[in-house]
Amino acid sequence: MAHLDSLVVDQLSALLTDESNPITNLSNAAALLNDSLDRINWAGFYLYNQNTQELDLGPFQGKVACMHITPGSGVVGTSYQRNESIIVADVHQFAGHIACDAASNAEIVTPIVIDNQVVGIIDIDSPDLDRFDATDQTVLTAFAEELAQHLDVAHLAAIY
Image (cartoon, rainbow, N blue to C red; front, side):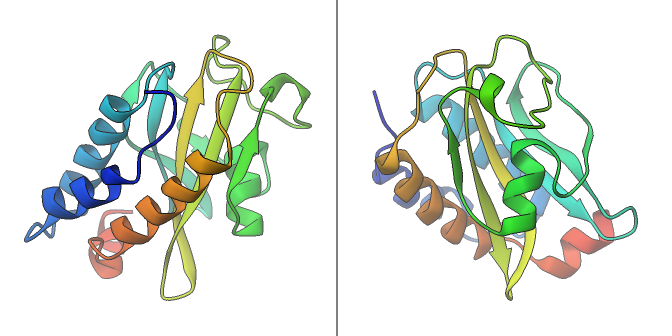
């Protein structure tokens, strides 16, 4: 599996149907991403906490990670601030990169948007340089849109 296949969006929809718990849905979504991609070492979520105005570590698959990211900082925070998906071929060349895991060399991030508000960021890291491409970005954006349909903002806000 070189790239993210669009079937993963259908799998996500089937997996999350009739489940309303956001932690459960995000946990299974992280596992699905991790199982659907090769040559990655981290797949998960950062969720915006309105109380602290930071992005907090959410469910993920991989090694321990940074627990809080300020909007505008690093790849995740930049994606949040710009409300856009970002592919970074070499994270060491990204100004302000936050090195949570020294083994990560490439990264793709995509916002999760509900009611025109960015509620979180999907983050996937790879130990390979230039691991992600436009196909991955397109599918991950569709994945984020599908995931947003299965997340209740009020329930998320009560947790975060």
